[in-house]
Length: 268
Image (cartoon, rainbow, N blue to C red; front, side, top):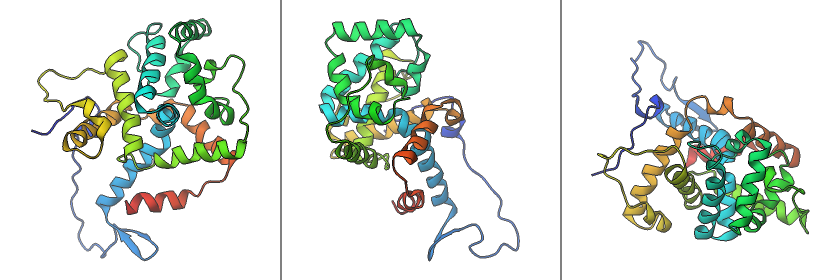
């Protein structure tokens, strides 16, 4: 039986219905890119891709960086430690998105730092996120660096490494972004607001470590991806400042070919 996670987000549950107009031109509803004509259904997939890349990807990037720098198991442990310290101060808030940490008051951020120091987790988290905060100083996780991040020995190499992680995340079904989403999902279950109805048959989420090589890991991945769009509800991109800052700051650091990204997304 396939896993289904139900939520109140209408975007996950609604169907799309339309009537075909009379005297419609051939390919009128197709989108032309070069010599290719993209049908409406594939255009809808591109809408989902844009929603993933623009608002959601920057929010979860810190999780992917911890995985990349520290390994997937240690990265998950560090992510849970940080989210747990914040959740003890602001219960029932989902501390997977970077923007969530803007909700902490100054005194609460100080207490979160103290908890991470006592748990001997702060140093590893700082090493994993240092370059992100160096290039993006207005990131909501800046409070983790009271004295500021350390300047990279080779800024060019550090930027290339950051870009390399980011480029792996454009296809949300690939391994690196799937593990990133899995950590966000785990935060939601362990120290956040995510609740799953008891009647729903769940896959073995621990199997996600083997994604995508086993059928059970792919089932877990499908459930996690569905949950992400439920947790990032409609209008999220308008309510959060960080994703806008992230992409605008990225253009300041280095120009980005958005047309190339769109073409790659449609061809996947």
